[in-house]
Length: 289
Ligand code: DLZ
Image (cartoon, rainbow, N blue to C red; front, top):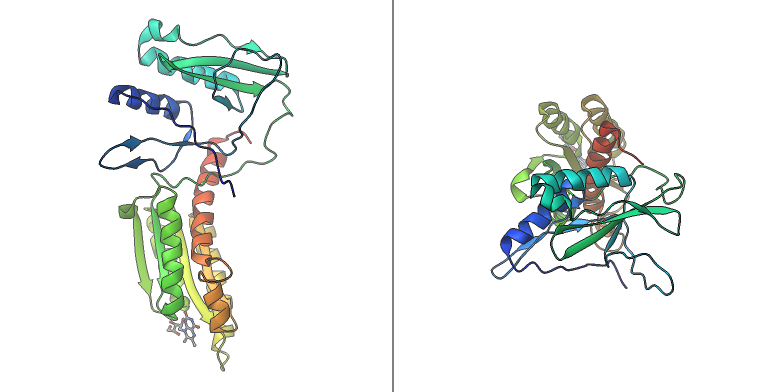
């Protein structure tokens, strides 16, 4: 099963690698996790969609990596600013003029570094190629999180915690930017979440717990209040709260939702929290859909 496309460009010199990374940050790419090990360093940049295209017939002269953007003018201005700041007029000469294509689009090609050419393009028809909705990204790079996790049913909540950490770390969050707060049971989760959210030191909170229906009415009393309290904390503070509190009839159902047969609710809650931080930022910036 194919999951994605990676295009690898080798920069022999470290300075070239750093300038290319700087250019792609300046142009508005979401940074990926990248890597650094004993033998190599990688900077990765994410796009929401990718495809591999083979072309036959007439086609304009373009670089072999093309990026579709929502606004060609904004991309052009960002490229020009970056080139001017990183090499002045001589560097700006590596920025081609925007031209019309045969497929109702405009495009330009730029070499942020000599020998590294990239083409940017956008539809000229405002309704073509535009995403239907504004959506958050799934990069957690630079974000700060708290995870509030209940100790009751720890056999389940420990797995939810593992899932949440997996989602945050794999999306680029740093371990030092994730605070883990343990509370006695699900009942205590909303109060802890509110206290953390009110401090406004984190971008999002992931709430984790597991309620299993017992023989008493305790379950009913707790579970409505827990979800209401977490929702209220989110609304009152404006900090996104991922909801990872399981409400199950049996231990087996809970295990299935904690990484056995039906995904991991901790992972889902953490991914939702990342996406909500990103979408909130886009809404606040008045970004384009
Ligand atoms: C008391 C209780 C019960 C019966 N069941 C659960 C449960 O299934 N999951 C859970 O997270 N917590 C449970 N608790 C504990 C309450 O959440 C709370 O911690 C205690 O009532 C102390 O306030």
